Image (cartoon, rainbow, N blue to C red; front, side, top):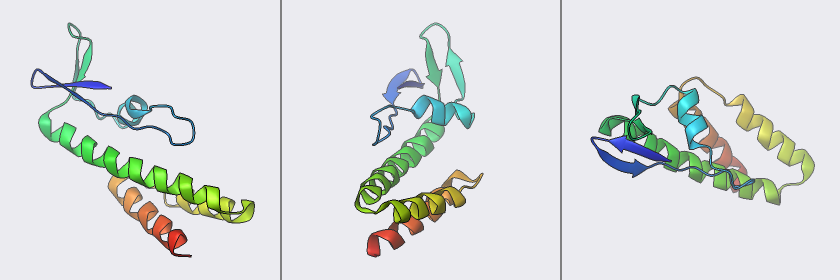
Length: 112
């Protein structure tokens, strides 16, 4: 998706590795992560700091999602269910803490 930062258009993108669907607008919108909307240009607005945070967060999340998807494909059904439940149980209101917890889970399963 395109974002307006100081009158410059930049992009943010995250794709579900299993469906191929982009979901960055849902991710950011559900977290109230936009700093505004430019009606004239029909683009969401972010400060540079906000954009930088989301850019880093999305890159990390994309990596975690890709690794989790690849890992699930190598597991039998029982282990895949256990793995998915561990990821769900790691949910947290602090988005960065959740990523850190999920990263640990993924790394533990990758090492098996």
